[in-house]
Image (cartoon, helix red, strand yellow):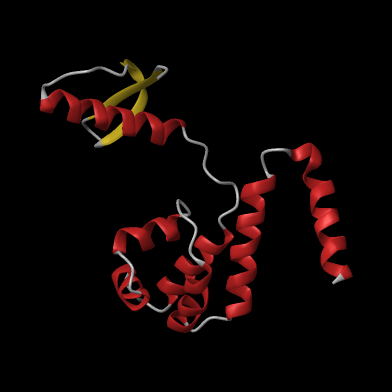
Length: 152
């Protein structure tokens, strides 16, 4: 496993984080000390979170959050209605995880939204996640997909 370097300091006056004062090097270590491994995992999680690339398209996630907040519903109410874990729904709403297709119609019913709109946004996010890495061919790919859809 490679190294991840990040600069981290805590500003005690504002209780915020500044990422510029102290450098922390994270290396994979083997240790029997349980406390050290938990600290290692916390640092590794923080490093991955800070260096991970966020998805550029979160249309579906943003829309369901907007709808839920306009209905003054809590995330736990929506997750209970979907019969999924609250943490899972939170990840869907943050855009960290894709919703399953069968959840789209349920979410639309719960939030009293247009199912076609939510399904469209969900599909746009999925397609964007697949083609956004290779911008050179993404236009060609989308053009071919459109042609194939029009043929059927």
